[in-house]
Length: 250
Image (cartoon, rainbow, N blue to C red; front, top):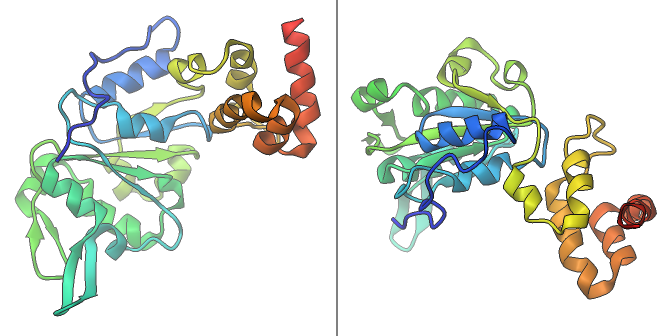
């Protein structure tokens, strides 16, 4: 399996004085430890989980949870092939076999069936190494060295990790209340302050994700600032945002 091209840097990269939370998050991610990153939507939790790891680590396997995600979606299932039905590994098993990180995005939306599968998948390393995980094809798969699980959640862990069993498997938790400094710095200078503040606005109706700001920054050079703002943030917010940027630049 290919290694992540972002894994050639020494961790953590964040100045602790600038962001204690992201310093801790990068430290934990560099340890390749099972953990949960939680905080407001749009602050870069999933991006960090998918790109920040110990140097030389395999590329993480990312799966986003919904209330319809099943245990079979995680572990695998039979599919119709040219010679009949054949087994297809799910994302969790692919990560286990490769010794890669499994990123469970939005664990707060996971179904009860998916959570039941995560009991085994995210168990302690020594336990998982002894017991493995039972698959629907009768196989027990055992994790290669390096396998671990990083979950992300927009909700608080008490709400996202429902039940003592799953909560105990994600005992290591990092709260990320703001955006990654590097993600903010990657925006044009005139957008940084507004983006950093708006992406963590406690009012969901007023919150603007960093993704939206990146789209705006890319589009405005092609179609102009007013239209870019309308497309990236919605017509109802476009005027207020362009006016605030104009005032800040004055």
